[in-house]
Length: 173
Image 1 (cartoon, rainbow, N blue to C red):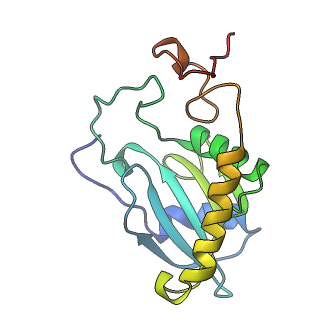
Image 2 (image 1 turned 45 degrees about the vertical axis):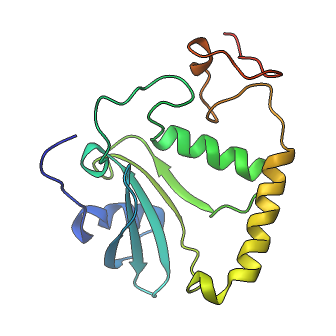
C-alpha cells in the first residue's frame, strides 16, 4: 500500500475503453465511491452508454499490507477471485453483470482490470420490492448450492490451515 493514492482518470482508461469497445471513445470517467480493495470507475462512451471498470492495484487497496493471505478468512481481493465468484454465481443462476473484458497483463491499465455492464436503475427505495425479490431468489439459489469444499471460489489452498466444517472436505492436489 503506497502513501500517496493515485486514482485513474480519462487518459489512464482511454486505451481500456477502446480495447473493450472496439475503438469507441471514452467521454467522461467517474470514480465511484464505496470500494476499499479496488477502484471502481463508470466509463461513459461517446454514445452515452456506460460500463463499469474494476481496477485492482496497490493504490486502490486501502487495507493494511499485513493481512493474512491464506485460509478462508484471508485478504480476499483480486481479479482471480472476482472471476471465480462471477463464474460460480453465474453457474447457479444468479444474475450478475455481463463480463465485457478482463485482463491481468497490466499492459492496458496499471493493475488487473475487469469491465462489466453498468446496471443502473435509480434509488433502491424506488425499486425495493423487485430488487428484494431478486435478492431473495439469489439467496435461495446460493442456499441450495452445495459444494465439495468450503472457502472462496477458486481458492484451493486455504483448507490446509483450517479444519473444514462438518460435512465438507478440502480438495487435495
